[in-house]
Image (cartoon, rainbow, N blue to C red):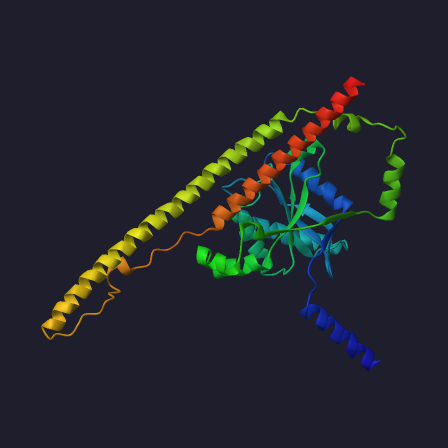
Length: 337
């Protein structure tokens, strides 16, 4: 018996030491409905909430969630938010509901969630929860019949870079790091109990075609495309400003190198004259000289995040345009017949 207990404890310690990689996020249907309801009620205002569940091997189970209250900017949001979370967790524990924090959810507008604030929130969660996720829901896509639900986490390589605070071009090239390596999208699996599945089966209608099937043929997506184009143009402007920062940096760096070379040439000429006069040569580097002070290279994190957003908007425009062409060809075929 003691041997079996010891083997069991050894297996547990081994599992804790080497945790398997996160493969899938399994979320209860009730939690999905709560997230959708909260995000749609306050749209277009961005809202957040807490995710509760269990971390089981390579599966992160999300069984429940609760929203964070929306407050004005002049209130003490951080202190009140922490007290609210603790009180909610205490109430859920008293009624035997899962109260283990596994991440948070937040709404977004047209997928513009790649921000520094999201990364900072991830790093704050990572201090206490090693494997946490963020569920992103986009209410603006619901009108297109899309359940825009994503589970994201930061890649291990990015977190290591972020902790070092070094996003220079040399360090990124050394690690072969690109803008696509910041976030990792985890597949989502929606799970329901047997009773819920049976109830949903009873709710299904016997009609072969519903109004939702007709709505899918609606080809007017002009507002969605216009908003995507506006966001895309804004991102391109921001990316252009980031590029101007780097151009300014490289111009200053070239100017400094030219000044260093001129100063070094002058010092060598002076040392040759001192050697001819039998005097000790002066050092060829002067740390107190401003021209030898290194110019800090701008961080490339912001430009990487903007590039992520540009890629996201282009993908959305491409997807909606492709669906519209498919609907037009289908409508044309029905009209010809």
